[in-house]
Image (cartoon, rainbow, N blue to C red; front, side):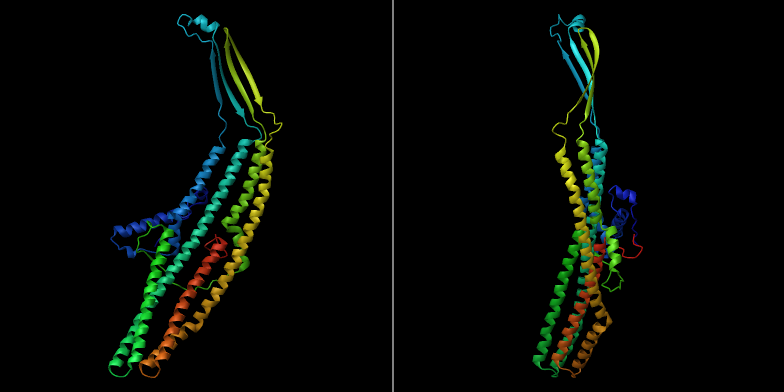
Amino acid sequence: MLKCFRISPRRRKAGLPRFAACGVSIGLLLLAAVVNGQTAAAVKIDLDQAIQLALQHNHALLAAQSQIPQSQAEEVTAAIRPNPVFTYDDLYVPITPNDFTSTEINQVTEFDVGAAFTWERGHKRQARIDAAKDQTAVTRSQVFDNERTLTFNVAQQFVNLLLAKSTLDFAKQDLESFQKTVDISETQYKAGGMSEGDYLKIHLQLLQFQQDVSSAELSLVQAKAGLRQLLGYATVPESFDVAGDLAYTPLPLNKQDLELMALQRRPDLIAAKQGVTAADSQYRLAKANGKRDLTTAFTYTHVSGINSAGFTASIEIPVWDRNQGEIARTHYAIGGAQESEKATEDGVMNDIDNAYGGFQSADEVAKLYVSGYLKEAQDSRDISQYAYQRGAASLLDFLDAERSYRATELAYRQALANYMLAVEQVKESVGTRSLGPNAP
């Protein structure tokens, strides 16, 4: 049994993936399969494992995650103080050997040695640090939102793969069942109990079942390729398989609870809120940059045998340039960030409306099939098949019942897939995999 271990919140703040231990465990699981001589087909992953593999190995997500340490590096840059400046000059230095004496150097040569340092005013350094940290928080939440989107894409491809597998299994079973009908019909035809026209109709109908198998096999290949792309082609073998089945699991959901959870957990909304804080930090930094820095210097001077020291201080007079343009721009940017936050919140509410509506519709359709329609279609087909094989029903009645049963079975599988996808859509719109009242 594979266990996943969550990384602590402190390590997550450092930009580490949330399920690093799980990714390592899955990698060791795949390696063990090779070492033990198991075939690649024996490697099976469930939905949770697929999601963790994607979070660990999806290249697009890894590229996005690299933005977090990049932003943290900018925090280091923001905290750097100005370097001191060293100065030295030497004048009237003799260039001929006869003049190069200690007396000449002491009485004629002039040299200066000094150091200058810039003192930042207006708390610039702290303002830079705050702005950089706030931007890192925004970046981290944006990366978590990428994880949310990737998680849904993996779940969607996973369900599509389950649907493809289920459809292929049904197509093979239906082909096998109809092949028996064709064999019985051939025996009846050879014995004179069936006309050649009816036998040909039955035999031609077999082509449809064979085409269904071929189409289902193609859908399975495409679904596996789509999932493998999200997981990373080097992460799982080509012939990997997925564990699980299409199933209807009733899930009581309350729209108001979903909205509350989404407002608390959606990473894009959190990023938008942090964007307001980051905009305010940029405004305070712009105001701090409007304060002119003070530069002080100490100089040691040797002139005509006299040693002396000098102290200087300089500061720019902000007559025209007071950074007023940048202060105004960042002030307006705060309002823009606030509007972006409101727009994101509206988008979250819209996502909840759409996801919850889709869930209710898919839930009602799935209940219809589970309540008895699927069994009725199967019973109708079985009765028509039994009656036809004994001459009590016409060929057209049997073929019609067969088509109705096949269409109902395929629609039932699609309804289950739609329901599972609707549940995943709700989870994505909320921003968490757990929809329970005590969701983490």
